[in-house]
Amino acid sequence: MDPQTQNTSLQRLQNVERRVVRVLDIAGGVMDELASPSGPKKEFINSHCREFMQSMKVAYSISSSLLHLGFLDIQVTLREEIKSVCEYRPFEKCDYNARIANEICLQKLEYVLTQLDDLKKTADRYPSSG
Image 1 (cartoon, rainbow, N blue to C red):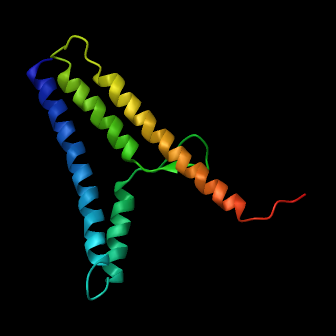
Image 2: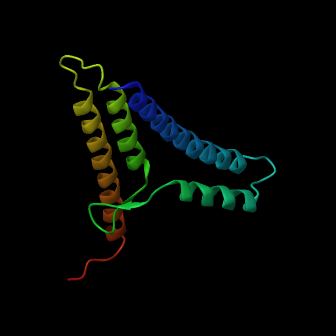
């Protein structure tokens, strides 16, 4: 990997890191405001929540009823940038790609299970017809 390509990859990785930090800053600001002894300011909460939602890319996956937030996009981008930065140093028997892919799949499955549990709880609240 030539230095120019490596520099570009590092810049993209830094941009992803900034996005993650900004989203966490926004969420932290909202949590601090909610914990304020004088009570939360509605305008502050609304503006930060709006900015948080704009920072996240919403994607439909599995079906139109299951949404998951753009953290997956951030994870995939981050993984690709780390991979491209590390490509110039091949490691024998490196299993990073397999491990990160498994971790992402595990998080997807955990999310789907959570959604299915919520769906079951909702369905259990209604009497069965029969």
